[in-house]
Length: 231
Image (cartoon, rainbow, N blue to C red):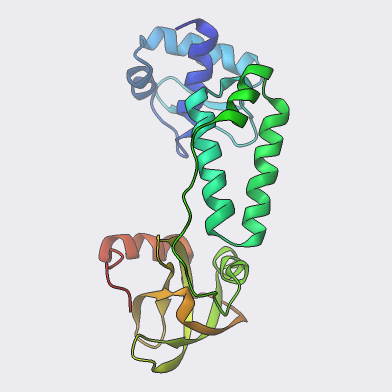
């Protein structure tokens, strides 16, 4: 691995950490000596990377530093194309448009040979199973998640019984045969997994969830897994 490749790889590693990480850990991941790591950190800082920290305290890469597009490998390009195609086919119109725009921006800055790789990638997404069109917009659910707003929904279970519930939305999950909203249900006082095609009506309330989404997500991951059979 050349020195320039090593520096770019070090940036990639730093981007994975939100909190300061020790030089020893970074050197181990990079398979280099601690002295080489310190020199590489200093080189990146001299080139404008906003890396804070020092030996003994750890290092963190502050947001805003962009990696050069040439860092993308063919495998990374194929992964991006496959993911964008999945989003374009399986989500809502807004996300589909955003996926196509993102690919266009990536294409514009790639060198010619890699640009051709993007166009010719053999990765495709197969047709999705037929699903009942949802009565609510996924964009509205995503907005509720993003803003940590309370949603008031009318939900119809597998038996056809409808209930009105106030929920704190957390996660949207996309299965082959269903789209699922994970949320805290105020009616049941527990986490619930709501099939989107069974949400009859949804209203964004002018009210924030009493608990932060990050806190609820941590609790949900500790207590729950998405069941195979969704109610």
